[in-house]
Length: 371
Image (tube, rainbow, N blue to C red; front, side):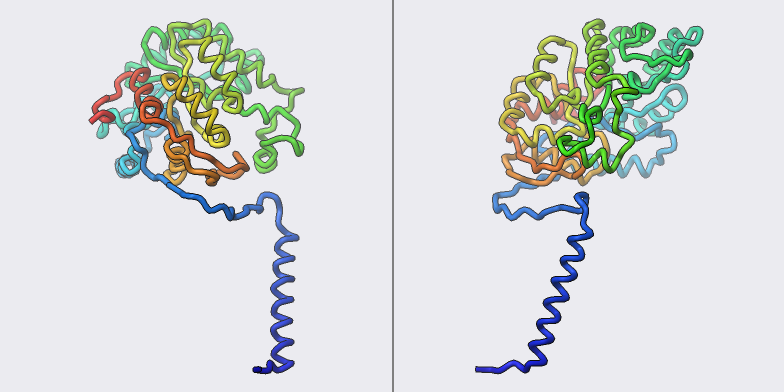
């Protein structure tokens, strides 16, 4: 039997101890933000980087894009083609000259591939003629090429009128804006509030603890902010009041965790739609219920992503199209759980990917999706 010199044994022992000490030191300095266990589960995997059918991303932001170079737009179209994205909706069109510039720069060379929504300037609500001016500006923006209106979450939370009062989502001074959208046949994609967890105590029971730890400004202290439910109720009240206007309640109204409640709202308000931007993680943890919901309400839910990062779209495709189990979500602080695919049938995929958008967003070219 070969003998190992005592000095060599001592060297091996010291090396092993050093490695253990280094591992222990790394573990002691690790925070919960660093914890990212590698799954040992062995199952079939079907990652997807290209959607099965062409789709419309109804929730994207290219900001007020008059500065977008033609080369940047060309690159965007190339990336869209690679993912099978038929059209992208830029929700950050602004108003006036910014809106006209965004439409010209982003839609001129690629008509119907990039669609622009206008925004309303809610500064100075309550000033003389503010409502009339806002309505006139939106009418002009639609004439310049805007295909819809996007309302940001600051309405109902942070927007103040000229007297320093919070402007509620259902402030009657805004009614003519919603009515005009119905008259012109353009949808209103409206983002109200934020996840309800942001109003809850930041404690060990809060599913959004990590997100709030990393982004403390997102915490909404109940004593200084209107409640989550009151803001959302304000949104639902304008949907109920303006029945001739199509509303897309952004991010599944932040109740993708309660699909029964979401279904009840869709049943109650026939002019209400929603989209899955930034909340695909809710479907990924309830694939059976999610599949049933999207099958039942396939004509009311649209595809959206929010932040434009090509590398993140595959999680959406995989959740919608496959039956894969226990795969990672792309942004840990949004959701700490793993995802499961819903394996949606083709008719549901087509409705969510493009058919609903073709129906409610004016001017989209159906041939992009059906050829």
